[in-house]
Length: 130
Image (cartoon, rainbow, N blue to C red; front, side, top):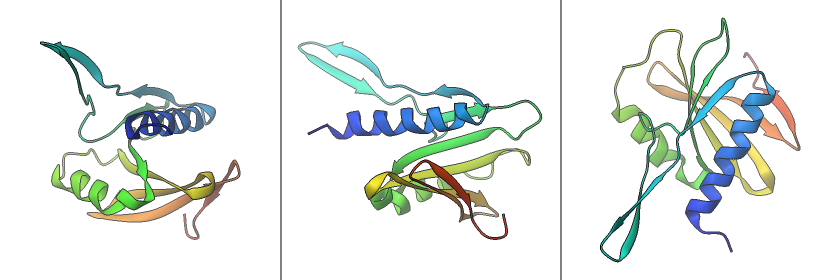
């Protein structure tokens, strides 16, 4: 069984590949390792609670947090705690992975997270009205 950290890293890589497949240049935050006496410790290098920053010419910058469905409320809360630091052209996205490899995508709009898309069996679906 994979550790939580290994699963998280695998999910982040999966989202990275999805975004690269859409033509984005992706930077992914990775944990750093350091030794204190006899212990190896790790530290998250998330940027403003986001795991991925994606850029594409003439498109909004994507700030992406990746997690599992059961951590939705926690992740939304952490992103909201940052406050209104985002540019009007930025998109703050939350990619949540569910059983069966299903991804639900939420976007922060006017202080609330709205489901904007879903990826199921490799197909990307926009929500109605998007």
